[in-house]
Length: 394
Ligand SMILES: Cc1cc2nc3c(=O)[nH]c(=O)nc-3n(C[C@H](O)[C@H](O)[C@H](O)COP(=O)(O)O)c2cc1C
Image 1 (tube, rainbow, N blue to C red):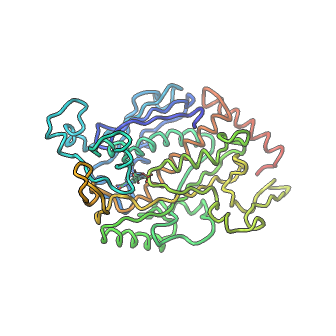
Image 2: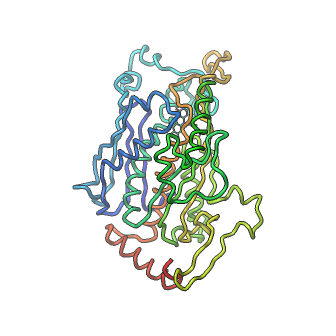
Image 3: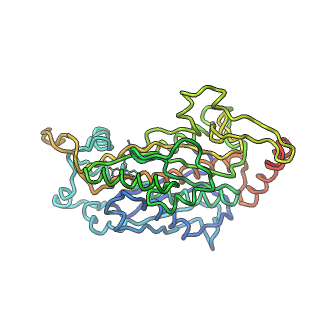
């Protein structure tokens, strides 16, 4: 659905690495490898992750499209190597291998909640390894790397994207919006939650689930500040930015529900208590005392913070494995257990930031055009000046 800023990922969980090609960035966007790596590290963190995160510290290699710290306007190719590939080299080899290598990591018992069975039926394979390697959320590493490039573009335009964890299992933040100024605290919490007491309760919820061999889900909020008004369009269904954001967030593995702003409350609230009033102040211009709409009305950004909530299901690999069936013998079996996390909600928030940055970056470039960052920013300033004439300083 992207229009200008497109990306495509490739790579298997235990293959040589994850690759992403990002196309459509203007020339001149500053790119720092360390900033990409910092986001990759944030994706790998969070209380509740399993063994793999300890083995691997992801680091990006930039293969094209960047010279002396700035994009060239050509496609940017990024690679993140899988550090444990070495011990999987024969299992994942692109070349024919002896039976032993094929059998060593064969998976036969599809895990409920994973792509295992659906993928086996789709591709007609009884070796679930062929499915899980690509269906694995390891792919989100490539999205986070791409998202860091979108974030670099947005930063130049005065847009920042952040996230925080709202709920893990039974532990959750109370009602009311979380202020932007408090989001720093999320980075200090092991579960990326802004409230230390709730953070402790979330850690305890994860510990309980882990002790039981179970998993636990939750919810993250992703927020963008400084987003210019007028991105997206109500002119066609597929240009509405709320729909584009929803698809991007829903595409994150384990995300099962998305709301824009306080969308989940919309079904149980009267209109007078839901919509954000518009007020005028000669000094401050037009403003909105509340932002329940999450910065989007009619599929178009209205200049308020863009806010979206993503609900993350409990991950499907469980030590107390659910019932399944051996695909070869059809005998009842416990579902396979791959090395697994207990809770990925904090990490999902980092992926959600990347996805929102990519959608907003695309919408920005769609709005401004421009081959160079300079042209993008010049057009944006013209737009902002025109909007100030209509709506005041804001
Ligand atoms: C960052 C991240 C890490 C994940 N890690 C695991 C994991 O270790 N074990 C697991 O069973 N699921 C994990 N998942 C979730 C599965 O990938 C996901 O549930 C599965 O691919 C099926 O897709 P669906 O839940 O969107 O239907 C993770 C998800 C994310 C976003």
